[in-house]
Length: 605
Image (tube, rainbow, N blue to C red):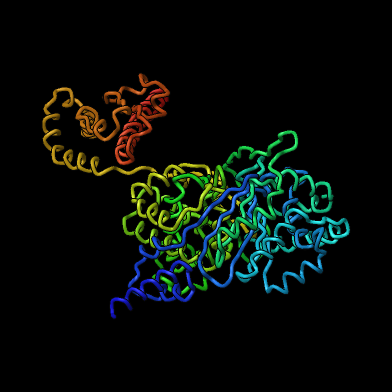
């Protein structure tokens, strides 16, 4: 009897699991025995199907009573030119103003009667139209989305009405200094390329865009191979594919005259732009270098690096106990009101940077410590730093997928960027593969000794000169442990070397100061210490030290400079020793020359 009950229970369990009952899922989530790794492996699978016209359909069934379905398109401000920049953003406003089958009032009533939420957004490379609704209303949601994208009315009267709305939004955006600063950062970093254009476009274009401009934009970019129909929540993939065939099979996949719009290559330029306004209370500053593209394998180490730097706001708790070193400094020294490390990745490039909001008197300090945090990533990042950054990144990746809408957006962007949905388990494995050495190497590749792009808005008088910020993108290398060991051995051998060298008859004729200099140079040069500290392809060339000649026999050029020809790759400590020796020798030469000159003047008198 017990066995039969168990068999029935297991059968019911398999049936519930197959149907992905929300009650069962909530019970599973509530089990404390399920580990983080098990939860990643047990995450729902993302299924992908391509239609005959090239449109891709992707879905993740989670068993929720609601769902989010949307259309993601490879179109944005990067595909625009100077004349139609802002067309994608303008179309976003026109999308919900009625279709050929549903006027604006009827469309709004349809959405409201379903209790749904219809929205859209435009970025530099993507455009999305999506709807969140009950799972049972999925067919109606797909139908309305297909009409919005394919049959937008684009009425002249509505265009004029929305023109005023767009101009109002442009004026409102100017008051959001963070958005203004980041837009300026893109403008200066990718100057002369489409990626430097704003998503909203200039106000002049908003005033002059015509209906034909919008129609041409749709006909050029809204093609089936560049579209992804994504859904998440209580959706069935087979049903979604059937709905896609019914409503999106007519989307064209051909271009007029085979004029396929391709992304023009972008060029990063290290530069700066400052918009000084001393009437503003706070300064917004952003500094960035060229980052990795969305599909680059380096993106994960850079994400870990950003997690190590972290973020900060005055409203945060923790104070001096914050895990981020830069955040602790911001609290202790009152460097800024907030800062955020960011990485904006695109199809072939990216921006890796830090944005901060600071009082005008602390801009210089905050910039110094921000660049110092970058240099630490390139040189001295520790195992504990990397472990903390990896944990923070994992928590962020899992935490941001906390609903059907973020999951659906993640699916749509992944299909466009990678051609597939990267599961959390794969992200987790790639994060675990990051070591301190990998992180240092990748950060050195993208950050160390690279020209940054800087944008600043507000009272930015104290922002350092660009050349100074550029010089802070590298550190003078210190001695390695091998060099320290060699110097230690030299210190032990130095007394014996000095005693043996003093027996030389050539040194007996020199004064004590000259003997000390000659001994030091000979030891450094002939004992091979310098060559042991340098790489084999970089050898220091030293002229043999000589006793000072009379001033009349010393060439003028020799009186003005050092007698030593040094490679620029000499370690800092050795270089400073040799420079000091050269300075002392030159000072004695000049003193001798001055004494002889005074003697001649005295004889003439």
